[in-house]
Length: 576
Image (cartoon, rainbow, N blue to C red; front, side, top):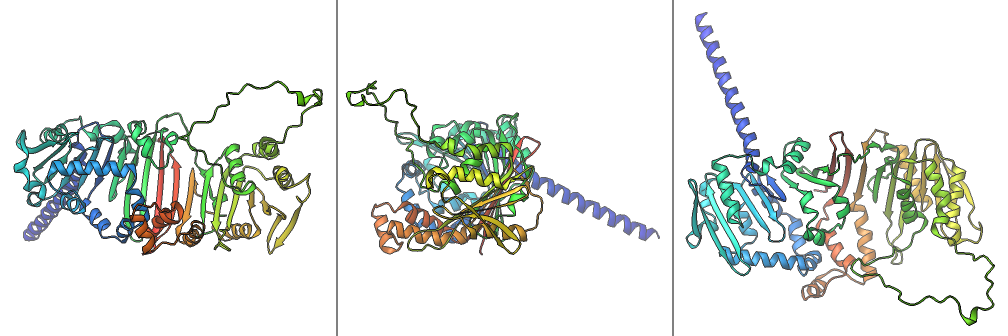
């Protein structure tokens, strides 16, 4: 009995020891994934982190997307841009100061496991990079082999190496401390990081409010790549406004900070974002979007469902997609409007026969045309709106675009009022009076709708609280069939959108090639490399589509939560 007790006690002690070791290992692992931000001094604009940066770099360097992009018209055109030139100039200055080539091989050599890159100055590209790698591996990097040519300095018990040269002056500084390799373009940054490693302090990136609050709002394990942005400082930068491709600075100003995690999973890349609002009083509403989402056909086109759109937004989509399908006027924001300095004439000798007591009949403006529809939409506000577009294979060089707008309201729609309002909006453009604006009832199986034929054919269906307006009968039936087959599962969100790259890519490539008289090939690549810019759509954009030809489709979901944060999730589904 005593032996049995001794054995039991021994086994229990061993189990406790194993559990304690596992707990200690877990705590060390958690600490390791968090400590790099505690080594970075404050003042950063954005931070990029990875638990295994070497694998991310290797994955990109060996991917077919990287090879396609470097050989694409998109990259060739980008290589002639002002931004690329400035980045290249900064790289050349760094190379001249460091004394070794800074290329893809160099990035692979200094890419360790857990890594952190903090950008402190956009214009001067001032950064601090910290990566975890065995000290023996760090010593083998070509940068360490050149330390004899650098000035040696010391912070506490750690040496670092510094070199400043060129006009403008560029600084390269590096150090190895234990299992960490540090690289910076500012002496104070690397000195501060080394000091924080030896003497922990609260004045770190980890404790900056924009960083800590965004990480806390994310409340999840970091992805394969994590980017955290101090939007309050980035958005006001003139360099951001100049080079931000989306040009949506006004929308970005409503957020103070953001975080994006990228997770690489089998067949899917998943991007999880969180954005903190600048104004705590600003409220973003999430509703159930399923009443309109079910009308979006699967594996086809582009769709976007939004919660509680205002009347102006609904009218804009109805005009752009359905009622006024014409090329949009393009305004160059860099050109000032012309000013008329002429002196207005009160009258002329040739206008003596004009009657001044007769009322002038002004042409009917767009506001008048849309007033019945605007009044109707204001009286029955939409709870959710879906905008859907898709293309067919080009015929005779022309791309057939199809679109539909779906509105779900809190109460039933009046079909007759909708028909009259749409007719009033179309009449001044395609008819004299109401001629040719007769809606014809149609039916196919269980589906009933009305159709407007003639110069601008339309199809419309009303089912209780849902109203569907499409550019043609086939598109309307496609949406109705989708709604009949799709499960009506609640989807609470502010916005849900999707894009099917596989279905839209062939038609886009064919029609842009025909319109631009451009066919990608070796001869065209030679012209591009010789300095002739490719056509924007048929060359530049199509080559970008070719780069990501294995991307099947993507979906976007945005929700607003009670913690005053906006959460976005983007799923990229790959064919492989």
